[in-house]
Structures are given as C-alpha cells and as structure tokens.
Amino acid sequence: MGKAGIDPQERKALVRARIEQSGTLPTLLGVVVRIVEMADDKHTTASQLGAEIAKDQVVSAKVMKLVNSGFYGFSQAISTIPHAVAMLGSDTVKSLVLSSGVLEMMDNALPGLWDHSLACARACTFIAEEAALEAPEEVSVIGLMHDIGKVILSQTLAADFARIRQRAERGNMLLVRSELDVLGCHHGDIGAWLLTKWALPPKLTEPIAEHHDFQPHGEYAQRTAAVHLADVLVRAEGFGGGDALIPQLAGGALDTLGLDLYTVERVMNRLNSDLSEMPRA
Image (cartoon, rainbow, N blue to C red; front, side):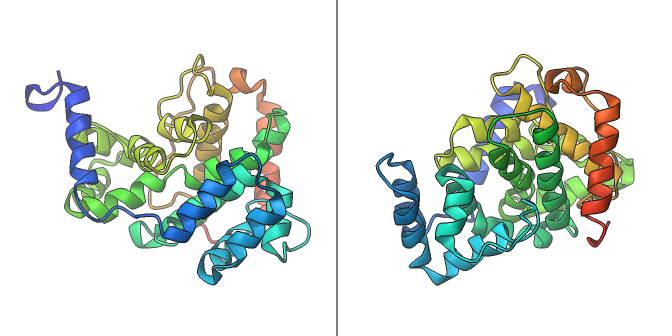
C-alpha cells in the first residue's frame, strides 16, 4: 500500500485523472491530426506526407528546426520537408510533428531541459549505432522526448511540480525519486500517458515510460536500455536539464545492449566532441 494507505496503482490513476481533467494538456491541431492519419496510412508516399506537412508553415518550421537541431547529426542541413521524410521515415516524422508543440515548452518547464533532451537524443544515436539497433532514428526521437512528462507536470500540476523540485533540492535527491514520493508516479509514466493519448505506438511510448524502471526482459528492452544509458551519460557530461544528480546505471542495461565499458567510453568521447558547443547545466 502507498501513501495514506492508497494502493500504488490507485494513486497513479488519480494523478492521471487530475492531469487529463486539468484542461491544460497539449491538444492536437487539425493539421496535425490529418498529418498523423496520413502517416498511419501505408498507401501514403513520402512525397505526399512531406507535401501535407509543408502546407502548414508553423508545423513545418517546427519540424525543420528539430530535424536540423543537431540530434540526428546529418553532415548537411535538411532543406525541405520531403527530404526530411525521405531521410527519417514517416513514423519518425510523425513523432516529430506530434512533439513539436510541446518541445518548445521544455526550457519553461526546467532550465536546461531542451539541451538535456537534445544531448540525450544524440547519445541515443551513438548507442543505437554501437549496439546495431534497428531504426536508430526512432531511438533518437525517444531520447528527445524521454522527459516530456516533466513538461506536462509543469503545465498541468504546477503547484505539485514546484513542491517536487523544492523537495528534490532540499533532500539532495533525483527528481524522479521526489516525484514518486509526492505523486506515486514519475515523469516517464506521465509522458507515456500523453503520447499514448496521441496514438504513438508502444515501441516509442514504452521506453519513455520505463527509462527509470529498466527491465531486461521487457518487449522493448534494448530501446529502453539505450535511453536509460543515454540519460545517465549526458548527465555525467553536465547536461542535467535541471536535475543535478546522476541516476545509477541499471543492472543488465549494458548486457541487454551487448556493450562493454570500452564501448561506453567511446560513446562518451563522441559526445564530448559532438556537443562541445552546447551549454552544460
């Protein structure tokens, strides 16, 4: 039983209901819904999807900003939406379209959260390459969105989020621990709730939900391990995103990825080189 004798699952359900009834959850614009429907249609071509996104200047500008923000590491700038779709695939572009409106609120939620998320996405790319994971672009998107629950918390439960941050600072603890103590769930759970509401598939939502609860036998264990490891490494490199402490690496994460400490050191060196111009906080 949890706080005040309430079952942990009941506590989670109560928090989820509060968030969903808050009236401040990001909603999907009509153009975004249409783009998502097209992306989900197997008969839609890359050029058709790109042309639809390009019709809306605001959405296309946000997607292009994300594509060229550095977390994919393309050697040359991506100049058009159709080019982005061709390079990344419809599922990844769909994820970027869905998340574009929320990601711009990251630094309002926590100073440094945007840079932390970008760094985590870049680390996910390196880890996915070293571990030879399928669809490394999707793993990068998971890294980019892994802390989206913190944005939702700051928008929907502002008073609780302020208390969580204060408690974490005074107790010298990770935000995730403070979230669990105060709410009975954490930002991974909350981010996954939103993305599930947006109809993103489990291969994207489950690693976000579980990046602080890694289980080596989960269906998407490799992706979860990649995001979990990336989060640990970028915090160690000073990209904390408002959370000064470094989480402990979960047992089995490296084995699940088939990596050793020498490979991790190589990833760290690539991060140092690749992110040398980004501010660390």
